[in-house]
Length: 319
Image (cartoon, rainbow, N blue to C red; front, side):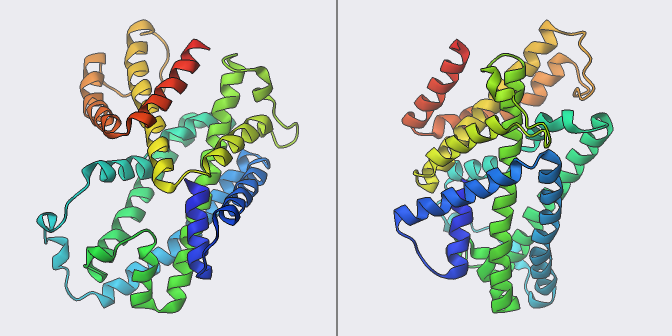
């Protein structure tokens, strides 16, 4: 998803289009850039993502700041227009899954921290709050700056910024959007590579995937393996990539929920420093809404996508 969306924003910035072959080469170049950055190590990725996250939020903060003086009518916040639109709830839930998932991935790099027991909970709380606010507040002001929802398409935030800040804010927000996707891609590749490296350490995959560069301590082989998978998916359309991404994400969530409850029964005495402070029955009740929602989204996916996802998971279990 991220190479495709990043390239789309760059094309908006330069106001141009590319033929399929050139577009694939552009996505490949973005992938190579992110791979090179990840090979510098998790510390480099973390510091880069931290700096970029601050820079990315500056244009959004500017849009909200100008919006406070620009907006005179806040009634769209309270005006329900559900009857005016044929709401695609499946697509809506899929977008929510894509945008709000991945916080748990940081667990794959917990071993790189000096004091994860203190750092991880704080980082998770801050990330969830900042991430949610940076989604919600600009969207709230965007909805009243341009209340004609028929205009809203991918990248429309930049157009909204242009309405109140001029041409310069349009271009700054496009660059920020591209940088946001690039940062997300960089973090995603980092955590996925460490997942694969951890599986190699546990002898679940060939040991070669556990090799780390002696200086940067980055799992280069796992990074390149993830790069190959991402590059192969760059030939798909954006809706197809979204669907496959959500299928595997939701499958992972379901497996995680089931595994967490199962381990409460099979290994009740294992130390759990991050355990949800409820009993096993309470944990089932706590997980039930997420499980039902996940099953619903899976049932709404195409048969082909579910079949591929099931086949990959089945192959992993057999292996």
